[in-house]
Image 1 (cartoon, helix red, strand yellow):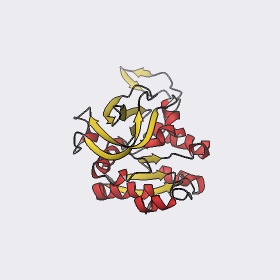
Image 2 (cartoon, helix red, strand yellow; image 1 turned 30 degrees about the horizontal axis):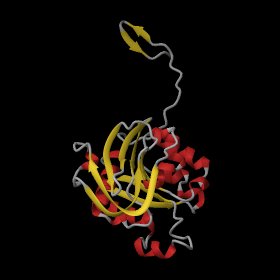
Image 3 (cartoon, one colour; image 1 turned 30 degrees about the vertical axis):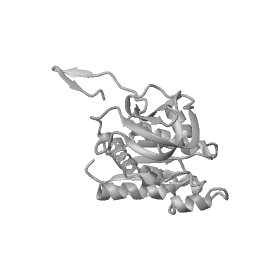
Image 4 (tube, helix red, strand yellow; image 1 turned 180 degrees about the vertical axis):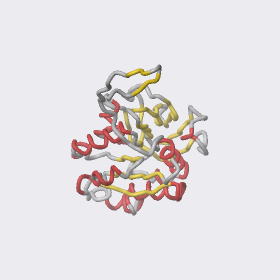
Length: 256
Protein backbone atom coordinates (compact mmCIF):
# COMPACT_ATOMS: atom_id res chain seq x y z
CA UNK A 1 0.00 0.00 0.00
CA UNK A 2 1.31 3.47 -0.89
CA UNK A 3 -0.97 5.44 1.45
CA UNK A 4 -0.52 5.16 5.22
CA UNK A 5 -1.71 1.91 6.79
CA UNK A 6 -4.78 2.67 8.90
CA UNK A 7 -4.35 0.79 12.19
CA UNK A 8 -6.89 0.42 14.97
CA UNK A 9 -5.41 -0.80 18.27
CA UNK A 10 -8.21 -2.47 20.22
CA UNK A 11 -7.93 -3.08 23.94
CA UNK A 12 -10.23 -4.71 26.45
CA UNK A 13 -9.34 -1.93 28.94
CA UNK A 14 -10.54 -4.01 31.88
CA UNK A 15 -7.39 -4.40 33.98
CA UNK A 16 -6.65 -0.69 33.61
CA UNK A 17 -9.91 0.07 35.44
CA UNK A 18 -10.41 -2.86 37.83
CA UNK A 19 -9.96 -2.28 41.56
CA UNK A 20 -7.49 -5.16 41.83
CA UNK A 21 -5.23 -4.14 38.94
CA UNK A 22 -5.61 -0.38 38.56
CA UNK A 23 -2.53 0.66 40.58
CA UNK A 24 -0.16 -1.81 38.94
CA UNK A 25 -1.49 -1.06 35.48
CA UNK A 26 -1.06 2.66 36.04
CA UNK A 27 2.61 2.01 36.81
CA UNK A 28 3.27 -0.34 33.89
CA UNK A 29 0.90 1.18 31.34
CA UNK A 30 -0.12 4.72 32.33
CA UNK A 31 -1.81 5.19 28.93
CA UNK A 32 -3.30 1.69 28.95
CA UNK A 33 -1.98 -1.36 27.16
CA UNK A 34 -3.65 -0.16 23.97
CA UNK A 35 -1.92 3.19 24.39
CA UNK A 36 1.49 1.52 24.77
CA UNK A 37 0.95 -0.65 21.70
CA UNK A 38 -0.18 2.35 19.65
CA UNK A 39 2.80 4.40 20.83
CA UNK A 40 5.23 1.62 19.89
CA UNK A 41 3.77 1.36 16.40
CA UNK A 42 3.96 5.12 15.91
CA UNK A 43 7.54 5.22 17.21
CA UNK A 44 8.75 2.64 14.69
CA UNK A 45 6.52 3.29 11.68
CA UNK A 46 5.95 7.03 11.86
CA UNK A 47 4.07 8.40 8.86
CA UNK A 48 3.78 4.92 7.34
CA UNK A 49 0.69 4.45 9.52
CA UNK A 50 -2.31 6.26 10.93
CA UNK A 51 -3.15 4.91 14.39
CA UNK A 52 -6.28 5.11 16.48
CA UNK A 53 -7.27 3.21 19.61
CA UNK A 54 -10.60 1.65 20.53
CA UNK A 55 -11.71 -0.05 23.75
CA UNK A 56 -14.39 -2.49 24.78
CA UNK A 57 -16.14 -0.01 27.08
CA UNK A 58 -16.93 2.37 24.21
CA UNK A 59 -20.21 2.21 22.25
CA UNK A 60 -20.07 -0.78 19.89
CA UNK A 61 -16.74 -1.54 21.61
CA UNK A 62 -15.24 1.33 19.64
CA UNK A 63 -15.62 -0.66 16.43
CA UNK A 64 -18.38 1.19 14.64
CA UNK A 65 -18.95 0.76 10.92
CA UNK A 66 -17.10 4.01 10.32
CA UNK A 67 -14.06 2.84 12.32
CA UNK A 68 -13.92 -0.57 10.64
CA UNK A 69 -14.44 0.94 7.20
CA UNK A 70 -11.31 2.99 7.86
CA UNK A 71 -9.17 0.19 9.32
CA UNK A 72 -6.62 -1.76 7.29
CA UNK A 73 -5.12 -3.62 10.26
CA UNK A 74 -6.75 -4.32 13.62
CA UNK A 75 -4.74 -5.36 16.67
CA UNK A 76 -6.72 -7.14 19.40
CA UNK A 77 -5.83 -7.61 23.08
CA UNK A 78 -8.37 -9.12 25.45
CA UNK A 79 -8.28 -11.32 28.54
CA UNK A 80 -10.90 -11.14 31.27
CA UNK A 81 -14.12 -10.19 29.47
CA UNK A 82 -14.10 -12.09 26.18
CA UNK A 83 -17.67 -13.22 26.78
CA UNK A 84 -18.94 -9.65 27.02
CA UNK A 85 -17.93 -8.79 23.46
CA UNK A 86 -21.06 -8.38 21.34
CA UNK A 87 -21.43 -11.14 18.75
CA UNK A 88 -22.66 -8.57 16.22
CA UNK A 89 -19.37 -6.69 16.52
CA UNK A 90 -17.43 -9.94 16.24
CA UNK A 91 -19.28 -10.79 13.03
CA UNK A 92 -18.50 -7.36 11.57
CA UNK A 93 -14.80 -7.82 12.31
CA UNK A 94 -14.94 -11.36 10.89
CA UNK A 95 -16.47 -10.18 7.62
CA UNK A 96 -13.93 -7.38 7.41
CA UNK A 97 -11.05 -9.86 7.82
CA UNK A 98 -12.49 -12.07 5.09
CA UNK A 99 -12.58 -8.98 2.89
CA UNK A 100 -8.89 -8.26 3.40
CA UNK A 101 -8.37 -6.45 6.72
CA UNK A 102 -5.36 -7.71 8.67
CA UNK A 103 -5.70 -8.92 12.27
CA UNK A 104 -3.02 -9.18 14.96
CA UNK A 105 -4.31 -11.30 17.86
CA UNK A 106 -2.13 -10.64 20.91
CA UNK A 107 -1.42 -12.83 23.95
CA UNK A 108 -4.68 -13.90 25.63
CA UNK A 109 -6.64 -12.88 22.53
CA UNK A 110 -6.24 -16.56 21.66
CA UNK A 111 -9.50 -16.95 23.62
CA UNK A 112 -11.21 -13.97 21.99
CA UNK A 113 -14.42 -14.64 20.10
CA UNK A 114 -12.95 -13.30 16.87
CA UNK A 115 -9.84 -15.50 16.98
CA UNK A 116 -11.81 -18.64 17.83
CA UNK A 117 -14.27 -17.85 15.02
CA UNK A 118 -11.43 -17.45 12.53
CA UNK A 119 -9.59 -20.57 13.70
CA UNK A 120 -12.58 -22.88 14.19
CA UNK A 121 -10.94 -24.63 17.16
CA UNK A 122 -10.94 -24.24 20.95
CA UNK A 123 -7.61 -22.32 20.92
CA UNK A 124 -6.90 -23.74 24.41
CA UNK A 125 -3.38 -24.06 25.82
CA UNK A 126 -1.47 -24.56 29.07
CA UNK A 127 -0.27 -21.65 31.19
CA UNK A 128 1.54 -20.69 34.40
CA UNK A 129 2.03 -17.20 35.76
CA UNK A 130 5.24 -17.40 37.78
CA UNK A 131 7.54 -14.72 36.31
CA UNK A 132 9.14 -17.11 33.82
CA UNK A 133 11.89 -16.02 31.47
CA UNK A 134 10.68 -16.38 27.88
CA UNK A 135 13.00 -16.85 24.93
CA UNK A 136 11.32 -16.19 21.57
CA UNK A 137 13.16 -18.08 18.83
CA UNK A 138 12.84 -17.26 15.13
CA UNK A 139 11.92 -20.29 13.03
CA UNK A 140 11.41 -18.50 9.71
CA UNK A 141 14.26 -15.96 9.38
CA UNK A 142 13.31 -14.95 5.84
CA UNK A 143 9.83 -13.81 6.84
CA UNK A 144 9.21 -10.02 6.88
CA UNK A 145 7.84 -10.19 10.43
CA UNK A 146 11.30 -11.23 11.65
CA UNK A 147 13.19 -8.31 10.08
CA UNK A 148 15.46 -6.65 12.65
CA UNK A 149 14.42 -9.11 15.37
CA UNK A 150 17.19 -10.78 17.47
CA UNK A 151 17.42 -14.55 17.80
CA UNK A 152 16.21 -15.06 20.44
CA UNK A 153 14.19 -12.25 21.95
CA UNK A 154 14.79 -12.36 25.70
CA UNK A 155 11.86 -11.42 27.96
CA UNK A 156 12.99 -11.49 31.58
CA UNK A 157 9.53 -11.87 33.13
CA UNK A 158 6.46 -13.21 31.40
CA UNK A 159 3.52 -15.56 31.82
CA UNK A 160 4.20 -19.05 30.49
CA UNK A 161 2.12 -20.35 27.58
CA UNK A 162 2.73 -23.97 26.60
CA UNK A 163 1.61 -26.76 24.31
CA UNK A 164 -0.71 -28.25 23.44
CA UNK A 165 -2.05 -25.13 21.68
CA UNK A 166 -5.29 -26.12 19.92
CA UNK A 167 -5.03 -24.13 16.71
CA UNK A 168 -5.17 -25.14 13.04
CA UNK A 169 -1.80 -25.94 11.54
CA UNK A 170 -0.33 -22.49 10.84
CA UNK A 171 0.28 -21.41 7.27
CA UNK A 172 3.60 -20.11 8.59
CA UNK A 173 5.30 -20.74 11.92
CA UNK A 174 7.34 -17.61 12.64
CA UNK A 175 8.37 -17.95 16.31
CA UNK A 176 8.50 -20.58 19.03
CA UNK A 177 9.06 -19.77 22.68
CA UNK A 178 10.81 -21.66 25.46
CA UNK A 179 10.36 -21.10 29.18
CA UNK A 180 12.10 -21.73 32.48
CA UNK A 181 10.29 -25.00 33.06
CA UNK A 182 11.32 -26.38 29.67
CA UNK A 183 7.96 -25.73 28.03
CA UNK A 184 7.72 -24.79 24.35
CA UNK A 185 4.99 -22.82 22.59
CA UNK A 186 4.17 -21.81 19.02
CA UNK A 187 4.21 -18.13 19.88
CA UNK A 188 4.13 -16.56 16.42
CA UNK A 189 1.86 -17.99 13.71
CA UNK A 190 0.13 -16.72 10.57
CA UNK A 191 -2.92 -17.76 8.58
CA UNK A 192 -4.89 -16.50 5.60
CA UNK A 193 -8.63 -16.25 6.06
CA UNK A 194 -10.49 -15.20 2.94
CA UNK A 195 -8.53 -12.23 1.62
CA UNK A 196 -7.23 -11.29 5.08
CA UNK A 197 -4.03 -12.09 6.95
CA UNK A 198 -3.99 -13.13 10.61
CA UNK A 199 -0.92 -13.01 12.87
CA UNK A 200 -1.03 -14.43 16.40
CA UNK A 201 1.78 -13.34 18.73
CA UNK A 202 1.73 -14.48 22.35
CA UNK A 203 4.12 -12.30 24.46
CA UNK A 204 2.25 -9.58 26.34
CA UNK A 205 0.64 -10.45 29.69
CA UNK A 206 -0.93 -7.53 31.57
CA UNK A 207 1.19 -8.12 34.69
CA UNK A 208 4.48 -7.38 32.91
CA UNK A 209 5.66 -4.37 30.86
CA UNK A 210 6.21 -6.49 27.75
CA UNK A 211 4.78 -3.98 25.27
CA UNK A 212 7.56 -1.54 26.17
CA UNK A 213 10.19 -4.13 25.15
CA UNK A 214 11.95 -2.80 22.01
CA UNK A 215 12.04 -6.19 20.29
CA UNK A 216 8.35 -6.82 20.94
CA UNK A 217 7.55 -3.40 19.50
CA UNK A 218 9.56 -4.34 16.42
CA UNK A 219 7.63 -7.59 15.94
CA UNK A 220 4.29 -5.77 16.19
CA UNK A 221 5.40 -3.08 13.74
CA UNK A 222 6.57 -5.73 11.29
CA UNK A 223 3.33 -7.63 11.82
CA UNK A 224 1.23 -4.59 10.97
CA UNK A 225 3.15 -4.03 7.74
CA UNK A 226 2.84 -7.70 6.80
CA UNK A 227 -0.90 -7.88 7.58
CA UNK A 228 -1.83 -4.77 5.61
CA UNK A 229 -4.21 -5.54 2.72
CA UNK A 230 -2.69 -6.37 -0.65
CA UNK A 231 -5.34 -4.15 -2.27
CA UNK A 232 -6.81 -0.86 -1.16
CA UNK A 233 -10.41 -2.08 -1.47
CA UNK A 234 -11.65 -4.41 1.27
CA UNK A 235 -14.66 -6.39 0.10
CA UNK A 236 -16.00 -9.59 1.65
CA UNK A 237 -16.14 -12.48 -0.83
CA UNK A 238 -19.70 -13.17 -1.98
CA UNK A 239 -21.68 -15.59 -4.11
CA UNK A 240 -21.91 -14.30 -7.69
CA UNK A 241 -24.33 -15.47 -10.36
CA UNK A 242 -22.11 -15.82 -13.43
CA UNK A 243 -23.82 -15.96 -16.86
CA UNK A 244 -22.32 -18.24 -19.49
CA UNK A 245 -19.71 -16.68 -21.78
CA UNK A 246 -20.50 -15.71 -25.34
CA UNK A 247 -17.92 -16.11 -28.09
CA UNK A 248 -18.22 -13.99 -31.24
CA UNK A 249 -15.52 -14.45 -33.89
CA UNK A 250 -13.42 -16.17 -31.25
CA UNK A 251 -13.71 -13.11 -28.99
CA UNK A 252 -15.08 -13.55 -25.49
CA UNK A 253 -17.86 -11.08 -24.79
CA UNK A 254 -20.04 -10.57 -21.75
CA UNK A 255 -23.46 -12.13 -21.93
CA UNK A 256 -26.04 -9.31 -21.90
